[in-house]
Image 1 (tube, rainbow, N blue to C red):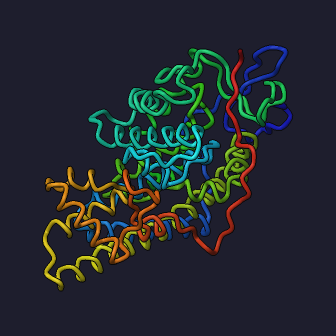
Image 2 (cartoon, rainbow, N blue to C red; image 1 turned 180 degrees about the horizontal axis):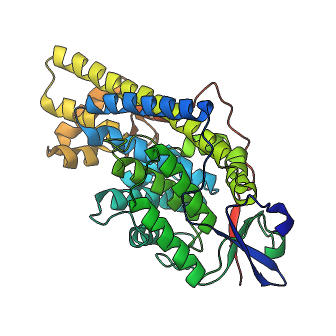
Length: 403
């Protein structure tokens, strides 16, 4: 990391570590912001998009059936930024405990993604306020039993880390966050105080500032990016900007991965807060609109299935099965039997009916141990925004540590 890249507008101080270079310690939030009409307009557009998404959320008959697919989609995309290759189908297959993994590496990736889901659910259900303690608990869940499990899950780092291309040494790093110990702990305490302080900033601006600050501190040895994105969701709910956890920015960050990292670095080096805020607010507006459309289409799909089977006077178990497929679109007859509380023959008859109607497809080609997929649900969740091209996957930015 070159000290000459940090101008007088940098919102922090450089601390010399040793001959390998310096580390950056950000000043406490909030910074002095320069408001203009364009930024105010972006705040309004993002808030309106969130309002529309909340409107869709209020129409959901069973929030769990609809929020779980969004949580899973976020888990896949957030983990993909860090280099995992697991797909949404891989995650659902792991949850359903069915052997659909072509190779061990994919299964391990899917387990990392599943941990992301569990970490988010832990944070949303916790009675703790948003705090370093809660983030440490979520980090412990995130890193449990997967790659990085030996890198102090749930503990603040005790050694220096840095950000840069894979294999880069600290002196060649793109960014070196605060050194461990009092400086890091003090900065995290300042961040926690800011989160709970009263101020006149728009809530979305607060959240964007908090996300930057957490990423700049990088308090864990591994998993910082994922925890930082989990923090966005917690703040959206805590600030009552969302009534249901339907909005996630990982899809936006992944589509614009280079710009995402460049904006964060530009804040640290040159204090370009307004450009970062504009980037963040555009992401909220676009992803809120996308989430509202996906949620509405999931609702339409459910209503189409229910209208068909109610018109044909199908039993309540068949309707319950289609509802379950929204939250778990990969299943077996045995799992449906357990979920619906019916005998195996009844579950198989339901599966056979859904196969005939094209709601399910069988994906193993076997006669025994068959696995079924609700392809319309997965296709809807995996659909990308066609107006924006996804970047070609490359080597992920890595957090590195001293040996």
